[in-house]
Image (tube, rainbow, N blue to C red; front, top):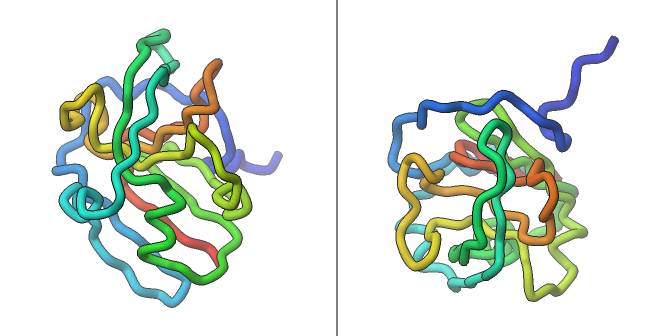
Length: 156
């Protein structure tokens, strides 16, 4: 039996202990360059707010609605890797991850995918995720959302 791809939507056991760190994550580009991106780096990019977001979390039920604020994945990519790519892998420090196809970023939406650093006007806490990928269009299982972003890998 082939191993399950950790970057495809799937459920996983809840991580009840927040990891250490300050919300910074590694950005891995197709040219081999690796950079550390901090919340402060995200804050200088265009800020987008998306309201009426829910979090459906394994073992924690549904919470919300929330307004998440951060940089759209589209704006993030335009700033750090404006060249063509096939996908973006967003992986949590606890090993859960997901893959966003770059084609998805071409779609304009009032509910874009975010690298969020604020919830309801406040910075995300360690418990809430520090930096987390929010997929507002997903409302019933939140399996594409990534809490505690640890790595963003761009695949060409």
